[in-house]
Image 1 (cartoon, rainbow, N blue to C red):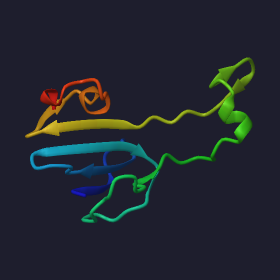
Image 2: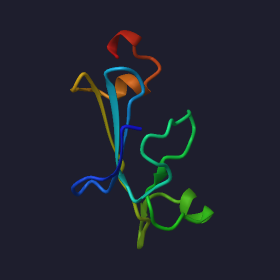
Image 3: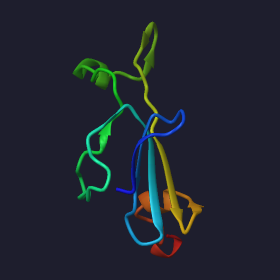
Image 4: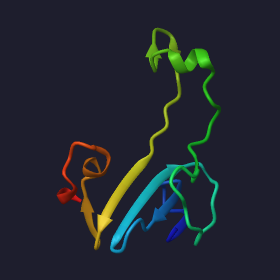
Amino acid sequence: MRYLGPLIDYGEVVVLEPAPDYLLVIAGLAQLSRSAGEAVLAGEKLGDLGGPLPTSEEFSREAATEGIQIGRKTIYLDIRKSGTPLDPEDWFDPMRSEANR
């Protein structure tokens, strides 16, 4: 991890370097589970969005129904190569070409 901690009004932020010249910025976390400088393996937890976990009933319900509001959290993702922002869809859509990365 290149950076771990608060950043302006983005909440807790994690900056990873998944490959040389690439940075992956994850912002909007409420709590962090790691320490700066640690290596992170695939599937390891970085942090939490915060707030209570939904019950199984709330989880299966639509996010907004008549008279019921389920809290939503937003996480922000930024991928950069040599400082230039990239479209994150290229990284998360398996149908897109490796050449787009």
